[in-house]
Length: 126
Image (cartoon, rainbow, N blue to C red):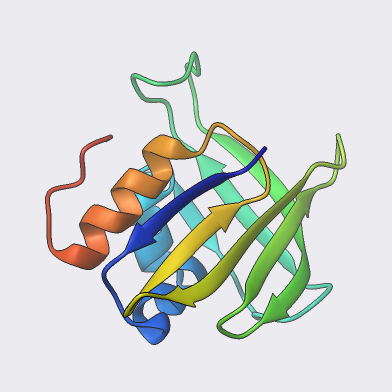
């Protein structure tokens, strides 16, 4: 099972939104921060999940991630150190727009946020 959404946006814009720190923090767990020193296979990322209405956190939770693949306009994937859980975001150009998919279910809210960000709407899930 995967989570997917079609977005009325060019591939370049979608790629930027899934790989740039400031844009990621607007749609993927909004308000949480990303530190991506270098966008390359094997590089480390720090994702800091902030407490919000959707999680039970009482304080911020920094997580170390490792980039598995960066294939421009195709795939951005990374995994958590423990447990080793792979999160892969893939892009496919389709019908004058871009279909964005996560490799597992449960990302519908994040994808709805991404679609809103790229199509100029309000972010639905804060």
